[in-house]
Length: 274
Image 1 (tube, one colour):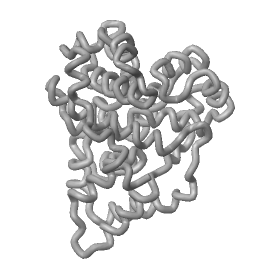
Image 2 (image 1 turned 60 degrees about the horizontal axis):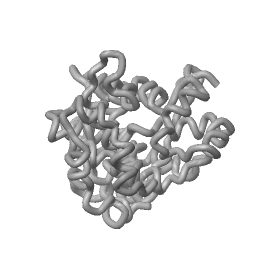
Image 3 (image 1 turned 120 degrees about the vertical axis):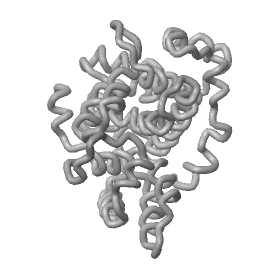
């Protein structure tokens, strides 16, 4: 399948069941807490893409595009949020993606978002936008596994989806990778150009004279979270650190490692949902 065909498909991304249930429960209250709604949506890449797609749709005719969950919640009314949550609930029968451990994927995505938000503050990028970009940066991997199950199964025999070398192998075998797919869908979903560009350039943020600092932030956050998932030791961390990206942003490996989430989300915010 060509990239164009894949992007023409409908990406029915799976949501975290408990996050959807808690979201519906909060929305059923007489006065839902917007902060709690934002926290629930912010654990789930699929809910976040639904929210931003709706906020950036022609329905609201905004003068500029929305790039963060708080901005989107300020625009959408409770009725729109209820419709969004109900639509997500209808899709909960879709609970598996061939070749993907969804619990690991959700945990990893949230860790990347948290790391991207922390790193953004040190390099003068918008932390809320960085959180969004980090949370949705790997949705292209889900889409590829849903749309190209045989090809992905063959790749998974050689490299697991969260391997640090995954994007390059996908490009070598297929002519495109999860970053291309994610950026294509983000454009289709009418996400802000900054997020589309960050997703597109996340694998090689500063190649060919392009300077995409948000892509660099996502790249470093993804490196750290992937290294955590595959349990790299100190030596392997040092060897695999993307030094050129860090140099461009003025971040050395120690500065990046200092941004580690204290709990790596496993036992607290995400552990309650999966």
